[in-house]
Length: 305
Ligand code: C5P
Image (tube, rainbow, N blue to C red; front, side):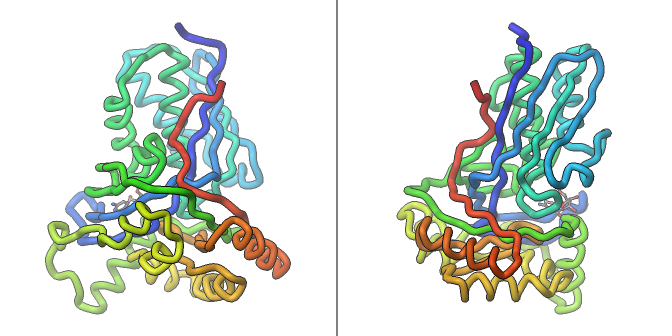
């Protein structure tokens, strides 16, 4: 039955491993990645309406488009078309994940909008159907539906759950200025062309290294720290050289290791435990950095009751 309003919470993510292969004809790159959903959430509230509209709250609300460039708007319209639903929805987004930060905030909005509209309109789509729609919206949207820990292949949208034990404690260092994901991928292509690397599409040979999966299974932060890798990092650092110093600063403050999250510029610092993470966050904040303490894995998009 359609209801008055539906509140959905969806997580941002860190790619604890991001292997990038060659570029396909559609412009997308082959990926082998491991996602971890972390405790920084987007809240989306869907209310009945005749038309489609979006309002955004949060420190970076001004940076978020309210039209069809907004992935949550596209998600709502895609679901309406797929379900042959003729009404609209008023979406309220409460943003916490950095905008253009490499943590999948826009993808989380889209995942939350799909789940919220499905419930509001009584569409009753299966998880599989929602996953298909999510994959059409963007490479990271299926993972925000899924949550937890998962291996992503293809464009990052073909998911398999990864076993994970315990929790991992992170400090995120955010930036005022975002990085555009397509621009970072283009920079990677440019750097690789300059090196003469990757003449052939290496998609077949792309694989997540076993130690990454073992570290997740054992819940061992030291082991995970040793296997953190992001092939987009060199490109992000080329565009934002200060990110390297941010990682060094985090390690000096006590983190085990740090990486650029996705296409950046958010830096994710893995810590041995929550006490260490708190201390690293405090040190960075005292140095004037925007730092947040989070943990993962956490569940995917879900309705709050
Ligand atoms: O799918 P999404 O909209 O999140 O991707 C944003 C951009 O990131 C794409 O337009 C593409 O330039 C780049 N991308 C890529 N290969 C992927 C995922 C994203 O090149 N597997």
